[in-house]
Length: 263
View 1 (cartoon, rainbow, N blue to C red):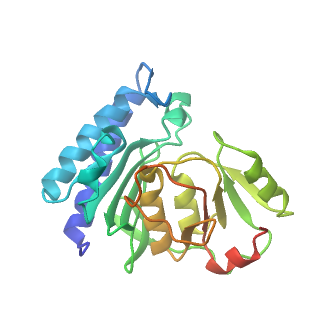
View 2 (cartoon, rainbow, N blue to C red; view 1 turned 60 degrees about the vertical axis):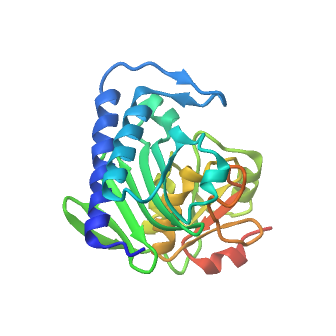
């Protein structure tokens, strides 16, 4: 599917409207519920979900939408989709609850399992990043796009992103094996944005994520020159398994860095 200017800007507008819905909740008092997997849920998640689903259906009525808040869609139906929108209405709900600003709106277009287009919006700062495979990656400031690229070559000392909310032993072991590496803590899909901009070199993830957590970020990183792959060296793909959970992955800005990482 061609991502033309009208569609791209339409999706960006949807993301920005969702950000407005999120901030309306963020600026006041809000209750926190918990879903069956004990992950938190707020009114902001639901408001952003409704806004995005309605907006995408208006833009592309023939393309189905899979959102974190509608993940109960039967797998037999999902398997018939060659193209769909994959959405996290509020990525980083824990960061939202902490009120540290490090949460995002994630919207990706997936074609035949490949994340081909992504938009990530940070409501608190109004930062917005988007990327399309074969067309490049950009940071949007106001109504203008600034082209972004990953850092190549990735020379020492490396800058590595590690989650503030999820720091496990294997991540720490990798960090310990990279002497002199500068470690940056960052929440939500903002790690992908920093990677796409060249602000970091490496984002390892050895803790469960869901497909909607990574698709938009992968599209932006790979449009900017980087790569996201599993630990066996295979590219990340979507809607290919019974589960919507991802396995472990490594995201790098410089593909050549993969061969230099400790195993």
